[in-house]
Length: 372
Image (tube, rainbow, N blue to C red; front, side, top):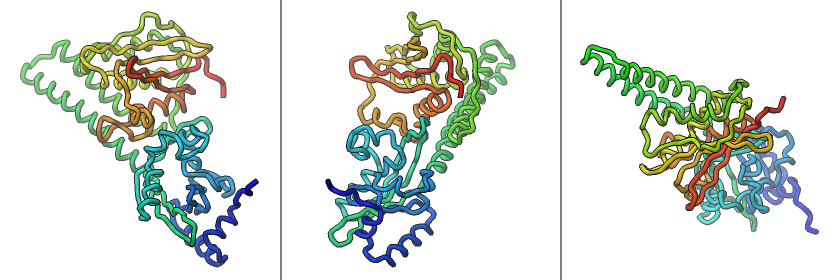
């Protein structure tokens, strides 16, 4: 049986002389960003302290010979027996593309890289600037990689862009109504309803962005509300019936389970609303969005269905933070469903899609939450 390599043997292959090893150790540890050396199979040979701190491990042996997706616990890293780089979704990974392109061109390649990570049952999102530089030592090839964590910077930019976009849209409508009221000199019920809806939209936009920031930092507080499945569906679909913003129609399934359960009603409403928005954005004029709920073995499962099909490339990236098919400044809706539904409501969020039956998003929640 072939003996597994050790950190010391791999380092000796990379830097045969001990003084060279010590110099490289000191140099890499002096750098603030993550710096690592991977072998020709993209397996970790050495990293600086910044990488170990980023993955909260103290013993390098625990990360040795892991690939990047395995180090950061990417949700795609264990889909195939070969690990990181072997699944269909991996072929869209910016880190893998950077390493493969640098291997073929023998040049330094930099890509943006999104990683959806699952650690201790919690969902996390990384946004990296990943640089791969090929390095040759005698007959051996290595990758020198640097990783710049852009997560906080990207979050700030995205939240500001979405926030300002949504608030300005609401304020534009409010300005138009104020102008109309001035012209008419009277206020009727219709005008008051529009004012109230605009206020609600502004308030919802502000609280959604605030709560998403708190959720990502682990500081969001949740409530335990008594919820009825039929009632929360009716409340979720009502704004889409009253405000005919989107194409198509919406209905609640008549066979939905009438079930009482405990969860945070605000967060669940937000998740259902995002699912419904996504469904409408994918629907045509004659399509119908269908919302339902069913009970199953101590769980309540909500579903939102539309008749469109999600392309394969989109399927593979749909829950990643910042990924969107709707243009710049989007891409938080499906990610927030996953983050809030799984990290805070102890549920499970997923979807199914095919060309014949369309697309359905689901959230599965315990009827009675377990006591931590």
